[in-house]
Length: 453
Image 1 (cartoon, one colour):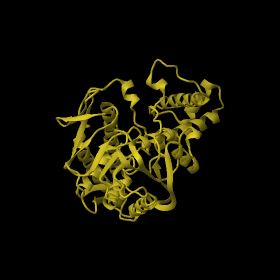
Image 2 (cartoon, helix red, strand yellow; image 1 turned 90 degrees about the vertical axis):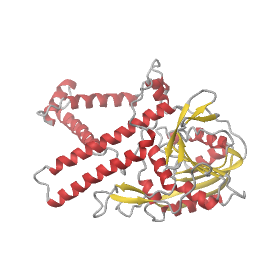
Image 3 (cartoon, helix red, strand yellow; image 1 turned 180 degrees about the vertical axis):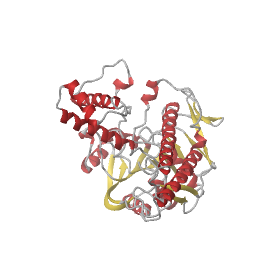
Image 4 (cartoon, rainbow, N blue to C red; image 1 turned 135 degrees about the vertical axis):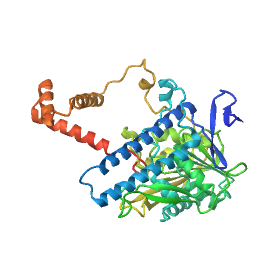
């Protein structure tokens, strides 16, 4: 699409759609989602969900301070955590303030929003630990990932990587390292998540950004959070005339013209997107000029509901070749992954990196929406399946059990009510109800928040 800039927005010259420009330091980041208003609504909901969870956690800790059995050490820890939560909330609100999530815009029709619904696993705080991996820990993880990328890229005989696009850039450390060490003519870092990209943008522009890390398994003295000073080794020029730029958008529907890039990089990406790899690979092909190179690095841990889409490494390489690429190099290695120095939790990942050269154009299929057509078109029949019947029954029983809770009935009392209604054994009902309540209790205590995605 052809865009013109006017009054802090980009405007499509053909369809007249408007795309906001998000002011971030010295640069402006275009909001290039396929449906910009729907995406803004989706991210506003995630932003308000973060605020709600932060407030709920704050209130829970406040109540704990008032209990009689709180020891002096516990009181000090909980008080410190309260201060951390309050400051962390202010940090996130400040970072996202340029987007305007606090405005009260009209809500678009539900079906228009659902057509461009974001995957549920892409929350505001998803992959928050990556920020600290990228810009605070200095534990060798970034160097290991760049080395894996460089190893396969060295199989490319071109004199320059040219214009580079990173899809799923996150907090942007890998595209930053590629830019400094491979000297591209242009680098564009695209990601779906506005919090991660705005953080990466500010740090790359030279800011020393204080952010709280909440280790998954905190070591001693880190249970209340760790205030990290996130910074880049050196600033890059991202303002007007600079050749490192940021874009907010959907990497499965990249908003760029065909043949726009010489190199496309996808780090820790192709196995987590909801889109079938057979649909995504032609999109990469479309973006690359002839003889352009696609570099992928990360795990291949596909977890789609459809087993046919959970590809093995051999299947992945076959799909890449089928859609216009020649495999230049494949590399396997173990790398450290999210090994925070402040956490007892950390792991080592076996990753697969490959470089593939575009040899011919591939047919690009129309990207399918995330949700099925019967959810997007309310006039279509809902398909029936044994799985849905079982799930529906479970939801009905859960609703009945939760509605029976009145502050007086016990699990046994509710079990007898359910037993009479369904003519089931009382002990079986008690077991099922206990399972439901355990799940509800665990769900309440595992809500996503910063650092716990």
